[in-house]
Amino acid sequence: MIRTIKIAFLTGLRHWKIVLLTYLLQLLLAIPLAMQVWHVLEASIGNSLEINKLLSGYDHTVISDFLNVHGASITPFIGQLRWVLVVWALASVFINGGVLSTLVKKTPAWLAFWTGGATYFFRFFKIAAVFLALLLVWSGVLWLPFLANLEHSLETLPSEKTVLGILLVVVVVWLAGLIFLSNASIVAKTSIIEDGLPIWRAVKKGLGFTFRHYFKTAAIFLAFSGLQLLALAIYWWLEGRSGMVSPGLVLVFFGLQQVLVFVRVMGRMMGVAGVSGFYIQI
Image (tube, rainbow, N blue to C red):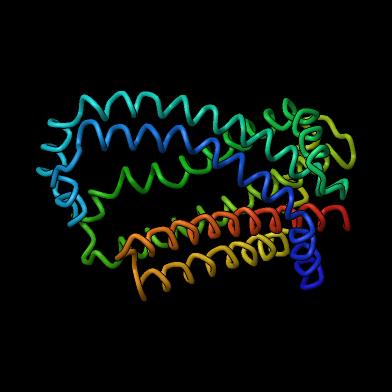
């Protein structure tokens, strides 16, 4: 397993051009949303001190007043957000196809990325829809009973610690299922590229393989998720040590934020490479 993680780490480094391209594509998708947010802040809210009230903590009255005053500008933004999310989802399917194609075929070139994204887009879109449906079912099975009985539990149980304990168990089980479905999706997509399987056989293959090798695939997922969390922790530590207290530091931390995003994309690619490579080896 350590060897698989090492190979995935080195594979991610060799695919730095694909990581850079993925980062740039995600940045292009985020820019329209950021511009819309900036427009709302500048045109409607301006130099209002109400933002400071919101940053101080949750207050239902303050939030209600804020929405009443600035709701006319925020509502159109929320309406546009759903279309941005649709575009983001479609672009994510294309990016996943391009990334996984370059990993499986060991061709870290931009042309291979574009070719792979176009070749596998519709099949990967169907795979994504299937696993999204499974995720919704899994989330509903766990969270709906908990939320439906939450108020009753708070009233009848002798301590809130019991409710928090149950919540912790639900979160851990939900995350375990999330890891399973994420890795099963990677295996299913890999089987389409590597073995040429049709959609439903690929889904079955992904679920079955990941179930049999859950702990090994989960270890790969957690290893590279830990890498991303480590990068985030380092950024928070640096920000806590100095903070954005001057124009120069604002620029420095903006650059560090982009480096953090790049590292997160790299970590995600390494995780995909690890799970995909483990499936191919087996």
